[in-house]
Length: 585
Ligand code: ATP
Ligand code: MG
Image 1: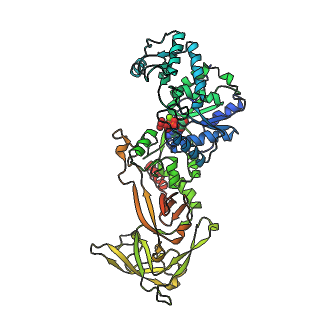
Image 2: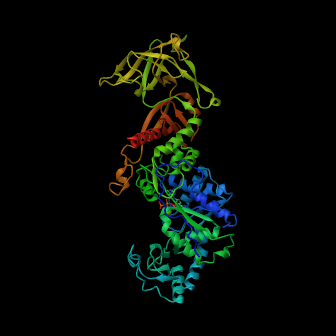
Image 3: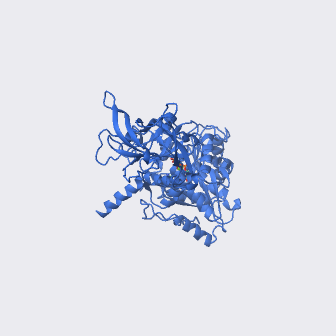
């Protein structure tokens, strides 16, 4: 008997993260199976990507689930490449996926390839033919599709459905030997053309493709479908719990049917046949996780490659400075449910920020430099502006990170945003007549500002108060703002790249059907910025907090190039507050 113990459709929703981490319906199943000794104590899962693109944040959820469910029970998790389609797969993606899984923090017990099982699949196909459970159909794809009927509409039998076993065997062998052109014939399982589940209406098992396979070379010119490969791969490896996303719910009956009709007991694994359980996909608003769309974005140069920091691919998030622990924590927080849902990217960002706040060193960087001259700054014995070294804290969250010396002198860069010729209400930063604190420096008061012919401010003049060396005024007077700065003479030029959402619609593609119609026109901004000298301590791939601005990741290859990981403000907190206010109203 096929086991029908997959989860029943449920009304539960995870549109709000449950935040439980811990137990969920999948872990409950594993616990129950262990208690009943269904697999003789074994727990084995697999993560089965098709190597036709790079992994994205949705895959991270599946990876975390597959690996942690196994690990929690002392079980095993394999990485299996579902490489059954020669047209789109390549070793580049295989290597990329292996390194992304490792980066995320998981180590598969073994790496397997569905294509290594092609001989076994072939042998089993002949076995089904011999039992009258598979046949060669000469209809083309269109006729096959029409013959399947639709929901509530019965299918019609193919005119080739009742071929003799010997004719089926001969034709199938000819297909495998390359004697028939692509698209001329397929092998189908002979199940039930009236089945209420469309997946069961004589599904295709093999298609003819005269194509080169990146691992098998030209050995095969028939290739198995996903369904004819997946459960069999699970059975060969001894998988117990085959976890996949909800869109495969209807495929489960077929998964069971194939395994029920194959001699899987001969494979020698303890316990029952594997069985499939579906869970909700992870989707984020304002982004896409379809590999097809991601590939279009890359191939049509809307982004700079699979690791463009605006993409939701793991390599993009890595380049952008997302700590893998933050991604794992996020996946655990959103939990596992049976209803698809979307989460705001701000929720993921809040995990990134929490992780980085604890570990990222701080540095002062001015993104849009405006010159500030301290008119009463002293000169040294040679008549040059004096230079002072100010002590700055590397990470207020981590005393062990210590302090650094930041050079200070009479001409500084400050951020354009920190100055207004005419200050609007609640602008407490620098404006003529106003005094502010320079971080790790003195109080300065603005006396004057120079403008160009168009009225743009080009230089700000200030006086400093030598009594405020420790950042306090001896007379107790207060300032309302502290701004950051970089000494002009010591400034190192850097490039900072700011990223906005790649799509400005919450559900890209909802309006016109094509997500690319919702591309944000200015999702990237490159700034010529200046940094304090200690920026040079930040190694490739390391994340640093630009004080008062945000977290930035040093590019792995180009020195002095920094990608914005995430800003400092917790937008998720605002979203939640708005939701709560909405709920109270
Ligand atoms: P495509 O976009 O081409 O349909 P895919 O995203 O389904 O591909 P696969 O390589 O087949 O890519 O996925 C490998 C595994 O990751 C599958 O088990 C799939 O269920 C799971 N997975 C894919 N996308 C998501 C997602 N958004 N959330 C959770 N799991 C996912
Ligand atoms: Mg898929």
